[in-house]
Amino acid sequence: MPFVRIAVTREGVTAKNKRDLIEGTTRLLKEVLGKDPETTHIVIEEIDTDNWGVGGRTVTERRSEAAS
Image (cartoon, rainbow, N blue to C red; front, top):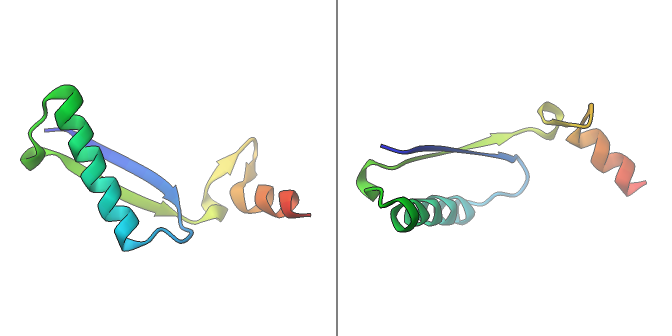
């Protein structure tokens, strides 16, 4: 029973994007590892950019600096 957690920043991820991620990840686990799609669990977690840090700064800060 595979369990996959996908974390993305909360920015424009559509319902179709999520369906595609779930379907594609499930298909990949079946093709590569032979896992049963009926017992494969995929969770997509959307995280605010203020709550995601890289290199000691939030993604919000990094993107703001890059835009300047």
